[in-house]
Structure formats: structure tokens, C-alpha cells
Length: 125
Image (cartoon, rainbow, N blue to C red; front, side, top):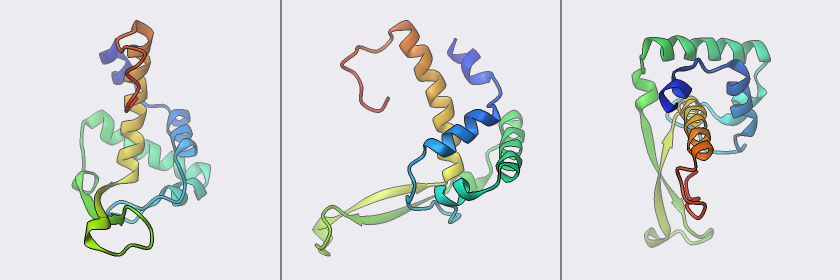
């Protein structure tokens, strides 16, 4: 069932819903594209991006820009500029995160349907 769920084409409504559900005002990945930018696009522009992503999905092609990530330091507590207060985070390309999130949600639905995870196992679902 997982193979079947992940082999189906990703529909535009799934892609658009993923954009709508994503938290706004997050840091961009290497390209500088933010979720706020995606949310502000017209439906036609989102459809163009979706079609382009579908071509890559069907051809099993991942461009280098989608594999890139940036490391950034963010403070654990605001107002404390010391090195001990900084933690590294990896910034991934937003389209990569959205697309992977759709696939992950499909897998999670199969797991939940079959009770594969214990109810107390809720982290990273």
C-alpha cells in the first residue's frame, strides 16, 4: 500500500494545500524562495510550479539546487549573542520540503490505517 500511495501522481490540490498549511515567515532555503512568496503567487503560477515538479517526479530527476542546503546559526535564547547560545539549523529548499511532506503524509495515512505505530509513538508524525 505504501508503494501504491507514493506512486500516485501528486495532485495540484495536494500541492496547494501543502502551501496553505505551511507556516509563514520561515527562513528561506538556498534559492531564497520563501513560503510567503509561494503563498502570494497566483493559482496559475502555482499550477506552473506544480506541473514542473511533476515532470521531475515522473522522470525521477532531482536537480542539484533541490539537494542543496544551507547551515545557519540561530540563538537558543534571544538577546544572548554568545557562541554557547547558538545552534545550527539546516535550511532546505521550500519546494523540496513541501513535496516530501506530501509523500510523508501519504505514508503516514497507510501506517495509521494499519495501526503500525503505537499510539504513544507520536513524535515526527
